[in-house]
Image (cartoon, rainbow, N blue to C red; front, top):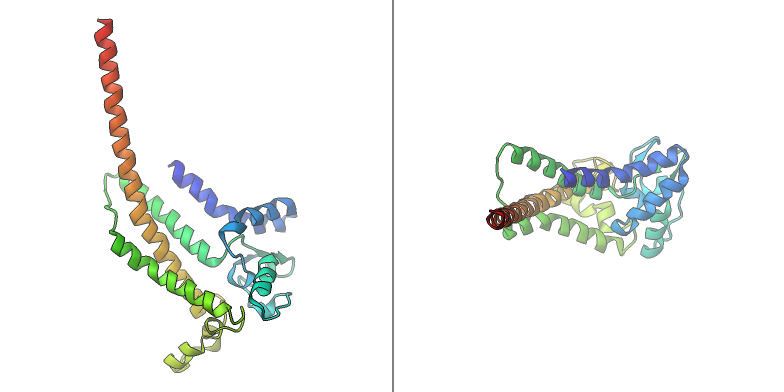
Length: 233
């Protein structure tokens, strides 16, 4: 229960940043952005926005100047947290929302099942690796693509995918990172797979370890109580 509550706060706090900025509590909002900065790239075009006209924006919709240099563009997109017109950025990217959100939800479900004495065995390392490989491939190709420029690489245009599918989908599906695009759907799918993989491997193992330790502690306490009774009798 402690883990579920604390991890739930950890998941919700990035959404408190845009709320704080919207309310004018800029000190609190910027503190949350800074707190979560080591955990995520926080690039604006791959993050959700609250209190604006859109939930996500393409780079050319943002009031930033991109020079086609990866490091410079990354820092510029990371630094933009929003404004009163576009809204305010959630303190971590959509992929992080999916990853940690699915892990938190899985932990809640596990807790409910455990209360009903339903035990879930941890998955094997092989299955775990299979589940996290899609995110490694998706994130890895994004990293390689960004070397050519944040808004010009092969994972931004996805011309290769358009060719494979014969351009059956709209241009907005292939290009960019907006909700409903191929990149967005891949981050959703791979993020959930990663979160679920961590949950069904880690949580049962932690639960088993805690139950063993609790049993050992109970045995030791019972033994100590019996020795006390012996010496007092």
